[in-house]
Length: 235
Image (cartoon, rainbow, N blue to C red; front, top):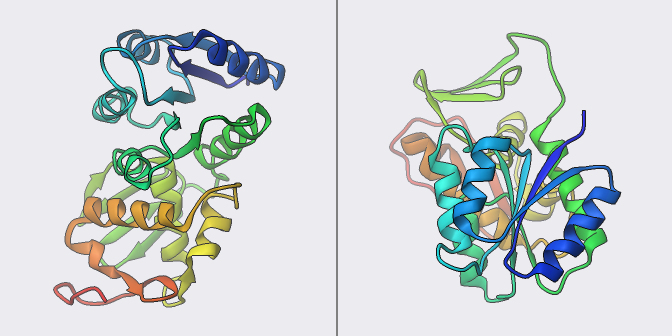
């Protein structure tokens, strides 16, 4: 099966360069130059990944990302943000809106292709036996369907959030350092910073509600999933 990639950028030279290298890597590539066309293409073509420039005419890449995550038919698509802004608040904003990864301009097309490949592996996590459910307090993870529920209520997670939660739960009781989580969840991609882990944990906790307290911060090291009664305060 050939994976479909949607490239969204208003700079024709960058769009052509990215599309060329991704097509060369064997992907089916389509392009869009603004937010409106991007959302239309995402809805109609159902790409596996959207490579999304932050600075777009009209609606920004952040607006497009928020809309992708809001719509049921596109909420699970992988999203890699492209940005010329290197400031941490800009990266944090994208991650908090649900981006799976980001890359700052100028970037290597070869590195982008590697990140696309890594994200596709996360989106298609290894299959396990049907009915293989992992329970941790009120949280239930159906590994065969890649679904997570809290007290029987299903919650929507991105592929990265799902893999992060699964990793923490499978290793419950053991401290996972940020570098360990980067290696497992993000596959140690170049230039990915430990702040990326913190932002995804923060977003994951929010989605889990009260159960987010089970993800404990171990100051100076990383995170640990613990089986604890609700109401206890995170470290």
